[in-house]
Amino acid sequence: MNTSKSVVITGHSIGGAIASLLALWFLCHLRTICSVICITFGSPMLGNESFSRAILQQRWAGNFCHVVSQHDIVPRLFFAPSIALASSSCSFQFIHHLSEENKTQLFRVVLDSLGVISQSECKSSFCPSGSYLFCTNRGAVCVDNGMLVIKLLYLTLLNGLLNSSLEDHLGYADFIQKAHWQFIENRSFMGGNLSKSSYEAGITLALESLGIASHKIETNNFASTDKQELNSEDAKEALKKAKKLGRTRNLNSANLAIGLSKINPLRAQIEWYKASCDNSGDQMGYYDSFKQRGASKRGFKVNMNRIKLGQFWDSLIDKLEANELPYDFHKREKWVCASQFYKLLVEPLDIAEYYRNGMHRVKGHYMQHGRERRYKIFDKWWSENSTDHPNARSRFASSTQDSCFWAKVEEARDRLIKIRTEGDARNFIKMLEDITKFDQNARRMIENKEVSPDVLAKNSSYSLFIEEWKEFQSQLQLFQPQFPGIL
Image (cartoon, rainbow, N blue to C red; front, side, top):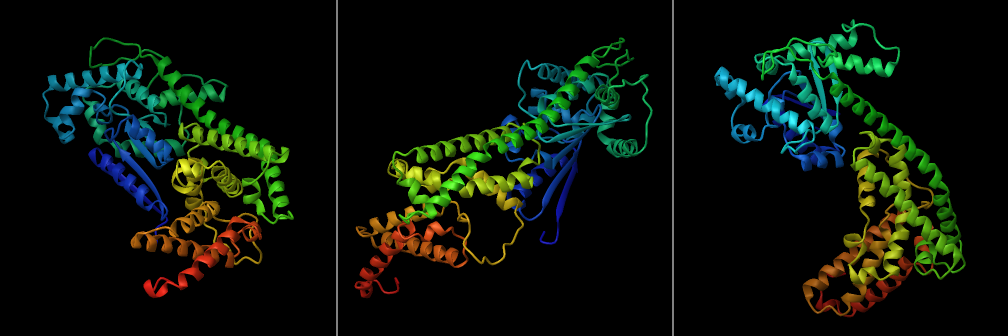
C-alpha cells in the first residue's frame, strides 16, 4: 500500500457488491494513502437511500462505476421487494434453475416494480449510488443521478427478450470490448439524419446507445408478444435531466467562484482589523481585542463580516452534500486553499465570540461542544489534499496554523482554575498532564514560528496563561515531596 498510488477493485454479480463493500472499507480506513476506484459488472443494488446519501456526503460517489448491460436482470432484481427478500441470501444462479414460466413471472414482477418506482409512485428499499455505465451493442451512456438511473434501468429493460436478460448477465466482456472500440472509432447513426444542434444530437446518440429508438420496434415483451411502441420521450427527458444536472453542477461551481470574489472584501476587512489589533498599543492582539471589544462600529462590522462569511461557506457545504457540485470540487486547489485561509482567519473570532458570550459555561468548551461543522469538514479537505511540507519559517505566520489554538488556551486556563480546588488525586494528575501537554505543544509551535504575533502579545490570553502556569508551578514545587515525579 505504501508504494501504490491507486487501487482498483472490481467484481461481477455478487462479487460486484463485495467489491463495493471492500472499496468502502478502503475509503474509510486508507483513503489518505492512495486513491480507490471500484468498477462493478452486473452488481445487485447494495444499499438504501440513506446509504446512497452518506456516500454522496462523503464525496465518494465518483469512486464507484457500476457497469450495467442493457437487459441484465441482476442489477434490477432487488427493486421487486418480494424477490429481494427471497433471494438476498441465495446465489443468483438460482435464476437459471427456474422453469420458463417462473422466469417469465420473475421478469414481469421486476419490470412492473421498476415501472412503478421510476414513476415516483413509491420508494424502493434499494437506491443506486455512484455512477452507472449503461452498455449495449450500440454504445454506452453514463448517469450518476439515482432516480435517473432507476428510470433508465426500467426503460432499457422494456424491449428486452426473456433469454437476453440472463445472457446479458454473463456477456460483459463483449459489451466492454464493443464500447471500447466505439469510443475510439467513428460509428454511423442508424436513425437517419442528426440534428445540427450538438445538444440534440448528443441526446439522440445517447438514445441509440441505450438501444431506445423513437420509431416502433418489434419486441417480445414479458407481458405480451404484440408490437409495442417504446416511449422514447421518457428516455429523452431522463437524459436531458442528466445533462442538465451535469451543467447545473458546473454552473453552481462557477456561481460559487463569483460569490467568493464578492465576499473577498469582507475577508480583507477582517485582515485589516487583525493587523490593526496586532499593532495596537493595548498589546492584546487579534483574538483578545475581538473577545473584549466594546460597542464600536468597527467591532460590529467585523462581527457581521464573520457571520456573512460563515453563511457563504455553510451554503457551499449544503450544495456539496446535496450533490449539486462536481464530484472533485472538494479536491480543487482553489477551494481547498480558500477554505483553509478562511478557517485560519475567522475561526479565532468564532472562538472569541463563544467565550465572550459565556457559552462554555452552558454547553461546555468550544472544541467538544461549540465548533462549527464546516471547520471539521475543512480540516478533512486540507489533510486529504495538502501535500506541502513547509520549510522552516524565518518569521512568524500571518495566522496561527492551528485554528483552534485559542480554544485550547481557554481550556488550559480553565483547568488551571479548577486544578487548584481538585481533591481527587487521579483527576489532579490528569488535569496537570493535560496542561503540561498543551504548554509543550504551544512552545513547539512558537519555536517553529507557526503562530501569529498576536499570540505573544503582552496582554494576550496566552501570555496570561504563561504567567498563571508559572505561578502554579512555583506553588507546586512546595508540595513536590508529596507528589514525586509530577514536574
